[in-house]
Length: 311
Image (cartoon, rainbow, N blue to C red; front, side, top):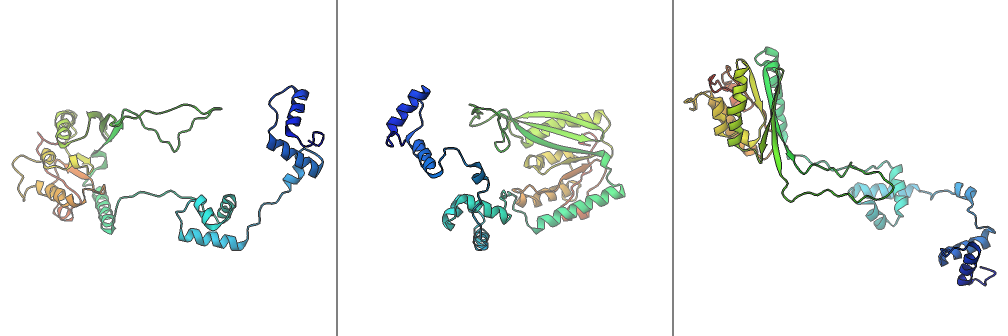
């Protein structure tokens, strides 16, 4: 630069003549290297000076300001907080690290109240007593559940990564109304029944249909009715009067019948139908409806005929 009277074009031509390369440094790079040469007498990086460079000093006052700010505004982003506090973002990140302020994800929960907690606790205690006294044999309970599966697949962007030297052109196509199917299964100490595949959405009609046509005949065929219990969760299709008829003796749908406990349980739970906190339904072939349980609306049981028994 000095020999060329600080003429950038002349320096670029000299670079090309010496190295036979048109990809010469740009004007800014040349100016920065020339300034470093005049200051240090060399264009090499001073690695020793770089290694001994000290970070910006973080004062206790700055820490207190940051601590007070996030105590009042815990959901502010780091970038926005740096603008509001007039602190460099990197300095703010260092202060937050020293203050041990890690980020936390928001937890999404159902609108539960103390009554829900109390009811679930009492129900759990009740079931524990029935198991301890032998009224319910855990080896004779059929637990059932279902889940939906989308044919488009499932992609969790939070933990899916593609490692490579170049950015891949990978996309996942998802239809506006993806086709899905339901898989229902029951399990006990005797084994697994299912899976049962149901197209579309589960309804009380198709739920009762596969119970009547597949599950009940299976239980009778393997002598798994006497003394056994059937458990289902509180999904709406499970809790209609039409489905409950499967668990009762025909003609005994009056208030003083065994169905009364199930019907009372169903009616009382309608107000909480938007919450997935309902206790499980248990049905048994031999056991009558427990009056105290019906009043507390925790456990539903029904004496049912062998010809229509679930278990």
